[in-house]
Image 1 (cartoon, rainbow, N blue to C red):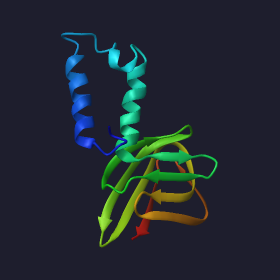
Image 2: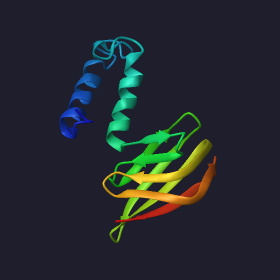
Image 3: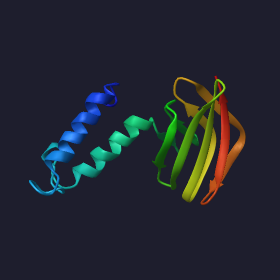
Length: 136
């Protein structure tokens, strides 16, 4: 539902599942809707991806997010961190923080806004924040 733009229904479904498996009535570690035992983590992760639009291509060194302002967690095979997206006078300001690992970037893509191709590949190390502005 989240990937199809039915955000309210998708979040309601997630809340209903969490309420059903709250640890008092049923085991919080065995959700039948998610394939029992180990499926829940993957299903939870897909909800995060659907809501943030996050995608990272290690081949292209391209990172993608949706255009909804807010602060989000992201993670790939090389690093993890947060992104803070803000609207600033018709533009989108992005602060990308690497909390652990290192992130290599050549292209920044904000859905419904466009791509910013960096003049040269940028590497952001753990503990660093890089700021970018994408113009509408």
